[in-house]
Amino acid sequence: MRRFAWGHARRFNSYPEYFQQLFGGRVQKLSIDAGFTCPNRDGSKGRGGCTFCNNNAFNPSYCQPEKSITQQLEEGIEFHSKRYRGINKFMAYFQAYTNTYNHLDRLKTLYSEALEYPGVVGLAIGTRPDCIWEELLDWLGELSEKYYVIVEYGIESCYNKTLMRINRGHTFEDSLKAIDMTAKKGIRQGIHLIIGLPGENESDILSGMKMISRLPVQNIKFHQLQIIRNTNLANEYEKKPDSVKLYSLKEYLDLMIRIIELLNPAFIVERIAGDAHPDYLIKPRWGLRYDEILKKFEDLLENRDTWQGKRFKGKDER
Image (tube, rainbow, N blue to C red; front, top):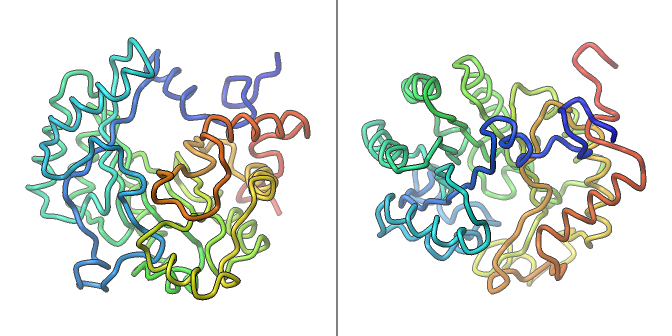
């Protein structure tokens, strides 16, 4: 059986296999909604939030900010135990909105409560690149000596014109600064990208991947652009549907093949597509679960005899 540079036979550096190697078994992420907001929602940078964002479309049913961290972890374990039996290692995933957008003392209290729960081996902290600072990174660096800690930055795009159009409220330069600061502290970090944002064509996306692949990050998540109910993007799409490019599943998987070929082979791929609740999703409706989409993607990789990093060029390559 053929094995790739990341040590297993799958044709991309997959998240489950990475944790299998690191912890000797499956580690289940447990989403947490700790009641944070965002600077482009509360008025410090803007109002209304990102045009695509409605966290209710992605939060599991047990994630409710009026519940304690402990209660959400308890219910999350019960929720996932119906599908996966025998799991005893968990990652507390602070997911909803901007999970570093508070005072350090408050953040320490919330993160520590999660780490004290039995079986929790680490933290995944979803945030924005403009909501990170030295003192917090210093503390997270100390924490990462004992626990698995990863900061996940929603950078979404490499292009400032796109970030402005989606009301992101930060620049790509902000992302580069945050990534550099985090790397210097020796903290694991991941990035989120949305494929198909308004105004970006495939050439833009593939050129962006060449920039992304040279960043000092460990993990990456890809999400297709989705039109979610009760968002500004949904209003825009209703008025001007031609202003938004929505990929069919076939088109998206073909593009993801080209993306994965350019991707740094050292990056751990957490997701290749997003998975919104059907009650909130307007378009595209592909009619498949994520595991079915992933199977089609892996079949394509096999059929085309290609893999993550096949066309990757490092810093010294042109």
